[in-house]
Image 1 (cartoon, one colour):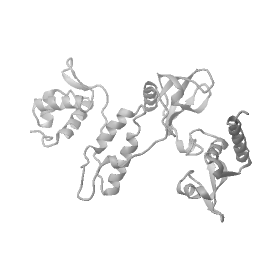
Image 2 (tube, rainbow, N blue to C red):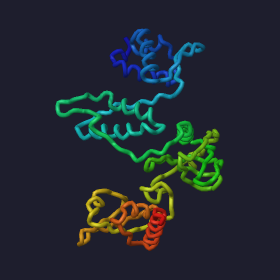
Image 3 (tube, rainbow, N blue to C red):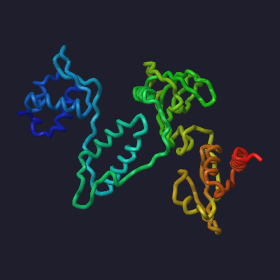
Image 4 (cartoon, rainbow, N blue to C red):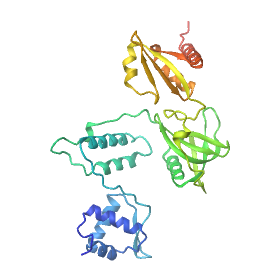
Length: 328
């Protein structure tokens, strides 16, 4: 018997994929000899790898051995110690599961199953039921699955990408970009890339990419280097600005508790006032994003500074009132 004879079937299948991926001439006989089992066991394992695990493995009749049609990545075993660790895993899986409306749907579902498949349903201390946890995302922007796959692939392999991009109210435009960073933001997906036409880094909405093609041209390691912490002026925003803008907003006593409960901005500071209201100071990416934040609160929030924010809020409210003014 071989040195791997005592391993479990699932571990044996991982070992089979490892041996094939190493480029060895893996015949049935060689795999059986290496793993200390008979030929039928190897054939049964390979069939299960194809049908149940979705691994693209084929028999190459010309060379007389198994080959993988695409790389196989495996997760190391994770040992969870204590209730908090298990709870964290179940909540993380709930977050992954809610990506079912995105191009990541099937992959996220498979990953969720892989992470939870070995969890017992019950321990001596508590039940482990994934349905006890849920997570609600923002509304998800639609992305063409074909576009998603091409963009993500070029990002992973450092290739230039040719896209047809349509900005609001503009005609579609061809661009050659160098993908640097993919960012999920409030239900949308954005690719930060160096735009060769503009000669600078820009942020592109994945939903506005009408067509995408891998040019095959490689991006140098130096050009592909990207630090999101340095690029994004404000970590809570998606577009790079000249900011940040330091703002101050007063909130009424009616919403003061709610304001204090949430971290709206990374560096926010909240001061309680004698009348029960609170004043928040924070750094926003720009005046536009700060204006949206203030208006979301309706009459419960008042912009204090800077003057540009106060002016922008007034103009936005005026435009909103005009749009909803009833005809007489």
